[in-house]
Image (tube, rainbow, N blue to C red; front, side, top):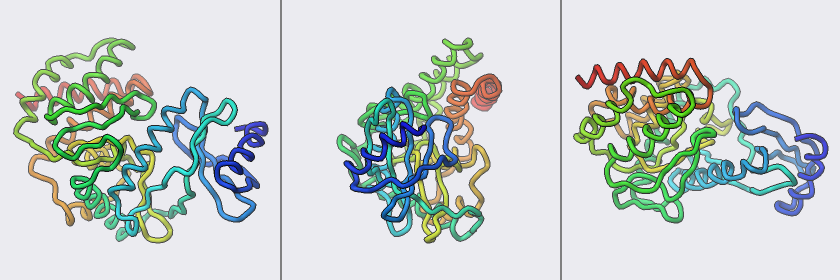
Length: 308
């Protein structure tokens, strides 16, 4: 957001939050939105994401997801930043959140263990809570609104069977999108046909999941709590969060040990992990291109061989 954008943001913040913007500087963020630290004349800081006006639905989905996660989180153990302001400022969409003081080192084994335990607690608490308008805790998988995974649309709705949901609302749309862009992956249709019967013996409970849990979307706060942000929430098998947390190697082992101590994963989760992470490989192929497409092709072939 340039000088004119900053000037238009100041009155908007004053109107929405009653604060005075003193300075604005860019900070490291994701690949989709611009991220900013907002210094306030009253003292303290806020965090803001900005994008084109057309990207407002992406920020709306993020805000809804943060509210849902906070509904199931223990605030004494887990920080989930809550939306403070959301809307259009000139030609920009803007989401304002509290500033999280994250531990820059982030190497505390007890801290990561506590974060894993807090995630397990969130997953389990969500089973007895309505976490958003239209949310259901009576058995189906999905979410009351569609949202996004990165910048890719993510269809939700509700389905009673986990295997059907994962095939129809997760893998199939990504495979179709990739096929339109650069051709179908070998064995994709065969995989989709086999998966429901392969997953049928596994009957997970429909937990609220973060949905995009790589290490860039979690951290340790200076006050000792863990933090989760940038979600892509829905009700799913809780294993999808733990699978993605292992995908890029950013979560240390104490995180997983802390989770297991509170709510151990069921037998077979190691075998389901590469299947669940195929979704994210496909999404990365759609977002970033050829290298991930090759990985997704190899993953499909390996899964088909494993199914026999």
